Length: 126
Image (cartoon, rainbow, N blue to C red; front, side, top):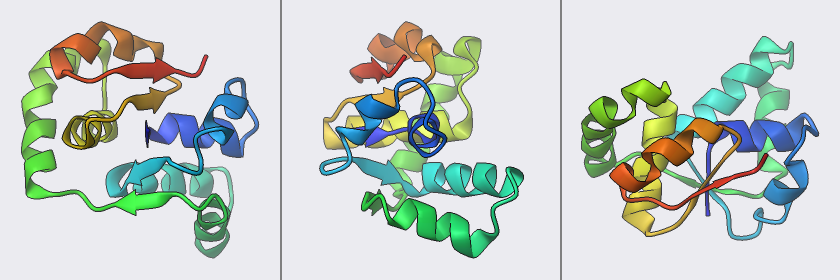
C-alpha cells in the first residue's frame, strides 16, 4: 500500500480512518513528496521540525524516493486529475502506486473519480 499524506495525517491526528492506516503500517510505503507534505502540515500545527520527523519515523514507514519516471507520470496525471483537485503530492502518490503495482490509500474521496484513468486502485479511509 502506498500512503498519501492525508492518510498519514489522519493517523497522526487520530482522525476518522486512522485505524485503517494503522493496519497498513507494516507494509506501507510513503513517497518522499508525500513525506514532505506530512512534515509541512505538522509544522503548520506548531510541531518543531525535529519532532515532526521523529513522529513520522516512529511509524516505521518505508520512504520511497521520487524517481524521474514518477515525476513524468505525475506531470502526465495533471490533466486527468485537475477536475478532482489533486495536488502534486496526490499525483506523486498515484505515480508511485502505479510503479509499485500497489493500491493508494488516501483520505480524499475525490480520488475514486480518477483511479481508473490513473490505472491505480484507490482505498479511501473514510
